[in-house]
Image (tube, rainbow, N blue to C red):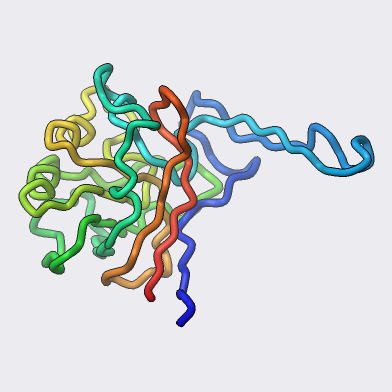
Length: 207
């Protein structure tokens, strides 16, 4: 039976909002088929933390794993979507009961409505979630906002809590039309040697 695939990735184009002060996404044809006589060739420039992306621990820890060192099974796994819409602070008590066999939790906050603009604010995530994830053997946390910490945070409490507990982060997923429940997740990062993050094409599917 064919898979039913749900794309939970943001599109990357000139309208995709970057973090304030970061490198915007751009793509152009550097060589056209007419010029080459055979093929079109594109050129792109971008932050590694634009749209739907993963954070490697090196992003916030000088000694953390780099993008090419990440365990790939973290991003190719069973995931549970939990609807926490309307919460300004997402606490442990707001999470659904975890289904057995789930290795990733994806939080649907519905806080980022206009994805052509960088959001002014989004929910704060309780760092205790990271320790709970470790206790439950959940390795990946996904959120439908630009970061697991507030935009202006320098302390990055949620990032560091995740790192202390050896948990991993997926940000900027699109869960607008995704119902709560259990899915298979694929959100593999690019193999960027020495990198601190990577855009991903994230999808959910059921067999």
